[in-house]
Every structure is written in structure tokens, then in C-alpha cells.
Length: 59
Image (tube, rainbow, N blue to C red):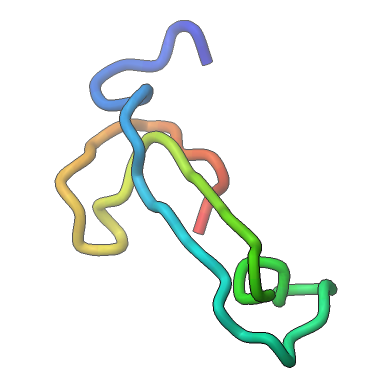
């Protein structure tokens, strides 16, 4: 990732879980109440302006 270019170090998405009935598990971790997710890098696929060949986690 050190050789990645452009917006590789910019925050791409920030998520805050608000669902009190959700349980941790496959594809649910980001909506569980109290969960926080942060992704860096590319977010163009989500309508953002960050352009980079990398993005973590990938959507």
C-alpha cells in the first residue's frame, strides 16, 4: 500500500451502527448498535470524490 497513489490516505466512508436488534455476523457487523467502521482510499463507487487504486475495506 506504500506505493499507492492519489487519495489512498483519505477517509472514504464512516459508518456508525444504530440497529439495537442486529447481531454480529456475516454482512451485519456494520449495522450493529455501537459499531463503528472506517474505510480509507477510493470511494468513487459510492458517489465520493476520493480516487485511488486502493480502498480498505473494499465495498
